[in-house]
Image (cartoon, rainbow, N blue to C red; front, side, top):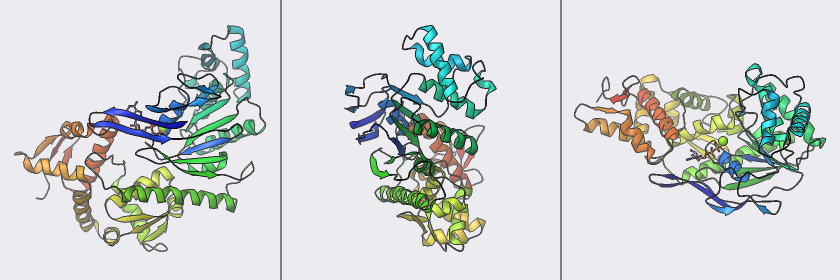
Length: 420
Ligand code: ADP
Ligand code: MG
């Protein structure tokens, strides 16, 4: 990929999702793409396989410019993307229909892909009769049946439970190590740092808003890898620090604006993290990987919580550490009422959307406003889904802070039961 950028049209100009991304894959390597949700990972994969076009820049594969679905490149999706009315065998054969492969050869190749991925005996089963892990095996068989030389995987294990994911990962790595597939390179998207270190030869970190490749990490360990190996753990920690350092510098540049996306973080989680940070052994200062594992959270779950505490000026993020600010200490240590008051104060000062809702309610004679009033305003900046999610988050925080009321049924905001 050379100088690839991609934007999507919005009422308020263009939303730039990928900005000047350069990326190359060599034969013989598994490359991981790590980034937070919304950073443009799926968009990047879709561009690589020719499903969508870049706004500028180009993608070359084996000397040819990729301009539409490219032969030799196959993709495995997070949600399996199977046809429920087709059997396993038929689902796998679908991969070959577009290529006009004769029926007999289609069948033979589908059967051998099914065999390779460990689905022998399930040829005539329907997706609904199978577990998530088996369904994703069908997803893999359908990608493998076209004999791809490049395999793209978009968070292929994230919809599976931990054990199923581990089994499937190991099976796939075994096939790779034993060179039992014609695949020459793999590009896997993940938001799980451990998974990336376990599987990849090289890891690229994608920043958010817009997505750029901001770090490249080589993974020097032989396979099979041991998660408990101290060198393995150290590398996971380093990547964590890289990603949090990015996060803090990205944030240093930017306070929230009215059109900023708000992460769906509950006030319980915010208070929980603050409380944990303030107690021993952290005393207000903790290493992010350490606190993530203490809370049993993954990177994609912890970052938004930490980020929100930072937006609210309750914490600062520095090089892989999270540090409570003085008001953050007070927030963590006070009782319910005091905590709510402090949260309300910081919410109105640091989250422009919350302040806007309150201002509109103050100004309207009956102090009422419908949800659509704000949803439409947000849709100038965000996609419909993101606008809805952002408003839901603001409702959540605003209700907790008691800066406004919201009626789920009538979808109306008001100042009923709110102190002036
Ligand atoms: P990731 O896979 O890293 O979570 P995506 O590539 O799915 O990220 O999305 C990145 C951003 O691009 C998001 O803000 C998303 O809303 C936006 N986006 C993706 N596809 C479209 C589309 N077809 N139209 C408008 N916006 C889109
Ligand atoms: Mg995605």
